[in-house]
Length: 246
Image (cartoon, rainbow, N blue to C red; front, side, top):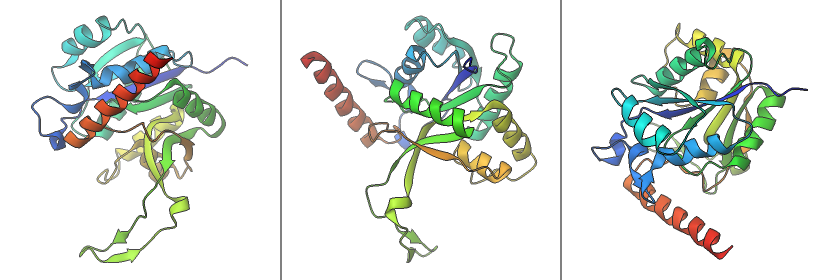
């Protein structure tokens, strides 16, 4: 059976205020190149991905075209578009774009939504996510938590200690059938979107669909703070040493 059309949406529109830098976190350099370039290359290399939509901040499209797409030879990037103020707004615009754009025209395939600030996504993670979305129509990469998690009340008092074996740390990519995620975001426009922090939440809340977790990687970190940037540099050096040894 022929594989369905797969589009990757890479989100690079965030301002990264927690990083405390003038440059957004996804455009900071690790290993001498922008953070987001690593994620873009992973989707570019994957034989399961047909095209890429890159969502950027205002007035960053030309920068991305020259310093990412052209510089790294990213032929699968078909659209570079300005995102919204909030993450869910950027995703909603991307879903509309990939369905209506003549260059893409993905109306009944799958979409992989990925944070541009996660540079260590791999082809293996993409493949596992693809196998899951083929079977379940909605899935999210993630890993079981290592630490004990505590739920507190507004005063910081512990009210519950969830069973750690059932608690996962959500990552990206998160993948969905295009008709499912498009309808979920259509419904979201008619409700209060506050509190929505990822795409799985949109599908869960608007469609009542169970989203299946898929094994990601503990290395698949999101760079959000200066400490994360140091960790990312260390992970990158570790990977480079492994490549040199092999």
